[in-house]
Image (cartoon, rainbow, N blue to C red; front, side):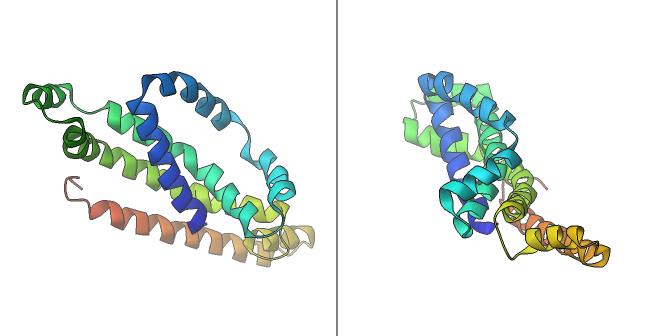
Length: 186
């Protein structure tokens, strides 16, 4: 879960920055991002197992796929939402592009990026569980399937409670990280 989430955050921010910075890339990649977001990720789980095996790689990629798009969209939205009057101020003082990016765009986009991370964390948990549904002989996803197949509602509810607790705890950790960002008025 955590590896897939970390990859989604890093990759999502990088892609969001690239799409925002390069109009040609925006025209080429943004439609693909939208189309790929519309794919049912659960249908990709068997392909991940075929391509990457029953090990942790397929589960990490499923967590990544579930969590990636909220981070990309939040990054793009945060960058696009940078106040125009501040952009004009930076242009008026002839601030270098790197300074404008670092001192204006990043602080303006960071609250949105953190919102995207908040949305992505529970989705990474779901992605890892879906990966375990399809290709695992252990883990919470496997336990949920086994309990369901054997009519063990006690195990099923226990596994669901653990999944919810893990997702909630990880969400709170992301929330705490977001509160540490000083320019966000929480």
